[in-house]
Length: 389
Image 1 (cartoon, rainbow, N blue to C red):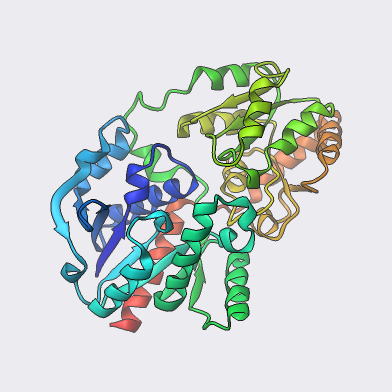
Image 2: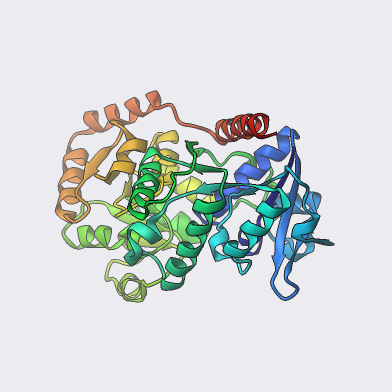
């Protein structure tokens, strides 16, 4: 089966965040299985067509991130009319950002006989546009409309996302596309295994944060939806442990960034590891007292399972998708009341036996690994191919 995958966003991004990590792990896993004829693509805006990505150079770049990513792009031009009939376009990257508008690409592919499968991480730009950049909202609306009309299968990471998609379709009186759920992996999987020794050293800021004493950790891009201000409010309200943020600066957070940089406890009880690598995040997870996830909305919540898999207790927002992922293995808080976090941490630090029991229970959690995620994806693709060809 021929599968095309547009990895423009992952390959050319200046950082690796949630979606880029998923794309990276999925393509590594699929490539290792060697079960499909895969072609990776990058869109060339100035020329108006895709170029093929050299597989060997791509995985070399994943192994050694300092390699110039543009050297992965070959001279081979791939136009829509070049794509094989009855092949698949597997959309797993952040393609709503692409300059190749899917409202134009999808009908052309459909005419060519190429089937489209979309990996939908969330529909937050539609359900809660206040938490997304204005351009993201506009781009996503166009993208999602094209998905509803042309997608043959939607893959979501949580049942909560499927429910949102169904509700949107009902409100639009649109046909509900076929949807399936594939949970995300909790380990750093193939990308970490392929990393060249010596490229995984942690930052000095990470070392300082760990050495400063007991801390709660928040992993994720600094953006309004993630609710980082909640932890700073808890710190200001007398939180008894340190606070560590691991993530790059996002959008619409200028006021919060100013607060972070000017906080009186910065580099004392509050630390920010900016542009954290996988090695930084892994080290921070392993040494954290708790991972706190006070998100206001989410498509899945990778930090929850990443922490659990490392034996680190989690405190998360009391919202449906976090409960779906965390089940009864984590503690839940009202993400509008920092005092709840202060009180919960205080109780935990006074009850060492209770805290030890929490950590012990985490061993019972059955977390998906990336190999499980890829296996489920391949099973879906094989079944789809059997039914449609």
